Image: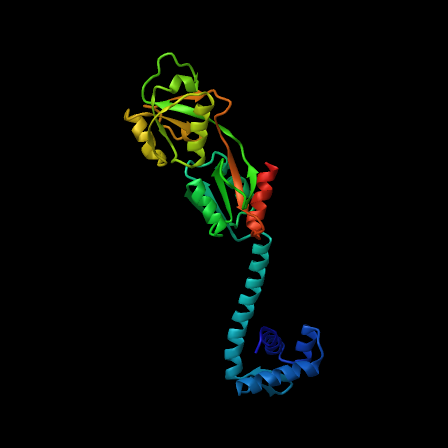
Amino acid sequence: MDIRQLRYFIAIAEERKISAAAQRLHMSQPPLSQQLKAMEVELGTLLLERTGKLLELTESGKALYHYALQMTQLMDEAISEVKEVGHGVKGSLNIGINTLSSVELPGLLHQFKTRYPQVTYKIQQNESSRLCELVKNRVLELAIIRLPLALDDFSVIPLQAEPFYFITSQPASGFDEEVTLADLKEYPLMIPSTEGLGVHYTILMAFSAQHLKPSIIAECSDIPLLLQLVSSGFGAAIVPETVVAQLPENGIHAFKIKDAHLSAATGLIWLKGHHLSAAAQHFLELIQQT
């Protein structure tokens, strides 16, 4: 039996006449009668019996009718949901986010949720290089990463760049609201990244462009731990603006770094030549609109 035959059977059981069922199904009576006979032969039992001018379900017919209703309903629901997922109305948005987080993402997700309230989310946090691997291996569809990185295998939408800040537990004498890299060369600094990654590279290249050699005492990509170390006086740090929003109200002072070479660029990536789900495509559309 197939789903089409089950729909035929439901119509006959409910109309109790072949002629009425055929009219409901927009088909002629002989083919419908043949389908009913084929089902009874396949099952080896009588499904309906005539009582006067009407057809009545046998016990076997009642059992089949019960399951036929459930199966056709599930099929209808499956078709409806697949279409909704295909159009991005439902489904899942599978996205990665850099360890340092992204100032844009919460606002973007709020907008996306307003447009597509039934979409669910899988958000994974990791280092940018690892996120690239996960997108390449199709574990993630999209990822917001810190630049620069080698992105030959990916399509990229550049996102908003953000400035860097110098943070310290010590009130810095002589500093106003902004500092220069030259002001910081003697401070014991921690970098919120590890060697070879985007933020680490960006900070060192900015110092190098001014022929300055910073005093790097630590690399720490765990931001809560980094902030604890700064607060305790272990060292100062250079961090993107996103991290400044996470600072405690007391204990850490933040100063914007004025340097044209020092800004934290981010980008949204996806694998070139790979089909994206409708939810991911709609998220890209939102990014491009905003």
